Image (cartoon, rainbow, N blue to C red; front, top):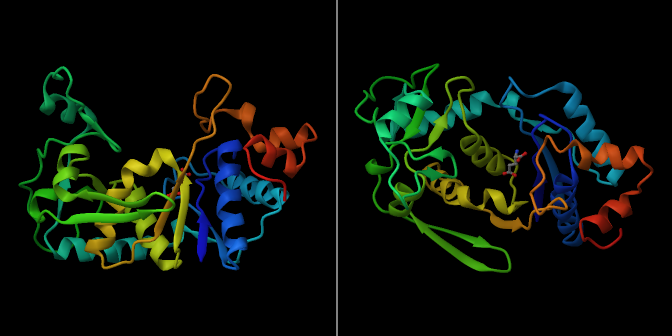
Length: 278
Ligand code: GLU
């Protein structure tokens, strides 16, 4: 078994991150497997070296060990480009020049009871889908995946303890729309990078929060198109604050470093998130 923790160095780790990292770590240790770390720093406008250092400090303090070298997404742009090449070569991508307000305008007034949002925000109305798809992958432009160019493939993954989960391309057309595989400013997207990297690291079991579960059929589709294996997914409960709201990066109050500064021990953190002591 190979598990991983894949934080973005854009803020302090909080109790929710600790829970995710500890579950992934404990699972690998219990199985005699491997635990890996990956720094998801493709958004260079938000990533900071100081946050990255804090991630290492916090995880070490929690008692976790991981293999070196740590994978950094900012080192892997060539690998993402290679994946884009494969999809572009299949005629599945088109360049999109729409701004958010263009998309809103093209969608028209919201209809009552119709959800216009998917896991990635507004469901794109395919304004740019006729754009030319010849030559090499165009640089410095947003690229979307044309779901209408695909047959109605079934998309299946295993959710640990809950069995098989089915989706399909037809369903994605409704619930997600033509999602972004490369953002203009980063030449990849979270979805593409996570799929390429989980495969490159040989991750067998992806442990992450239930908030990402809706995006998993997108990942399974990309794995299918890029001929990559689909890991087993463990989408875990979210850690919430006293008002039941899920913790966000800006919730400094729940930052691990703060608990640590106040004298908490790693086992206190385990107890707080409902895990047995180490
Ligand atoms: N980098 C993502 C985050 O910090 C995690 C993505 C994943 O585990 O697939 O929320």
